[in-house]
Length: 302
Image (cartoon, rainbow, N blue to C red; front, side, top):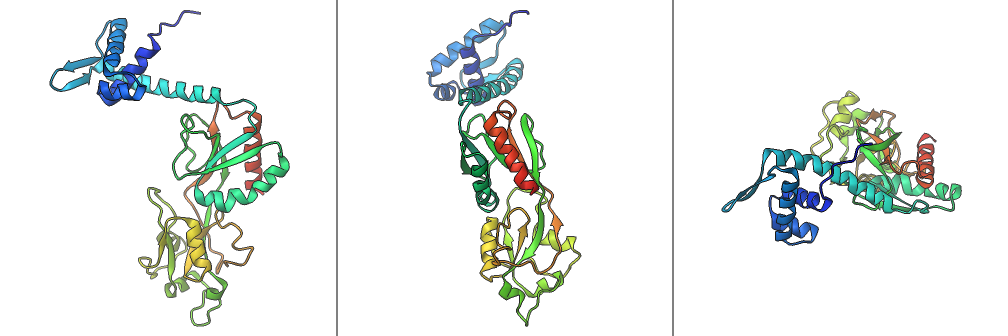
């Protein structure tokens, strides 16, 4: 095997930080050294390569050379992977604690009510639930496994389809049984208040407009009605008789079984996105994570 020709790691780290900031002082703050030390490391790397990586302008600071731009772009990905590998290596192999990240609505309505069955199956393992609307950065966050809502394109991660999602109307039983404004078919929604979920940055999410179009109903004013930022808030508003909300097969929780909500008609619309279980390939087969992933998939199937 031929020997690798690798420049000093400290010099690479200093150069990559300086390239991102285009400022030696900011780079020094990031890696906890002085701007002068960053400059010396960059010069050492340029000497090792025999080619300049920065152009120095006394009045305008520094700028990357074409080689510097290409080298910095390649190094950023390499250092990110090194950071992730190191973070994974520092985690105990035999840890009995699993940290799972999920969206607040999924955690409260689907995941947490089921965790008792996981404890029954694996009493030796403990689960910590972290809620977030952001994608998990496994390299920088203390998270082992995540449940994501999307199209399943997650390069570098072990990805398993958890479940699909279907949208349907729900309301309180009192609203359903109102003799003056019956709810027997979707067209009857024109006589009722619609409760909306505000979802930012998610294209093709099933809103009332999309749902009504999919079931072939026109003439319903969707511009009015209260709006909430989370599914469980919409469901709570519907359960208290404030109007009709869109629920999903994943996030409805036990509202239907407990009678807090009813489904006035059977029409359902399939969502454009699915739920996936994801974790880094490097840790996917650890016994604890494999057990938790298998349990999640069993729960979704049942």
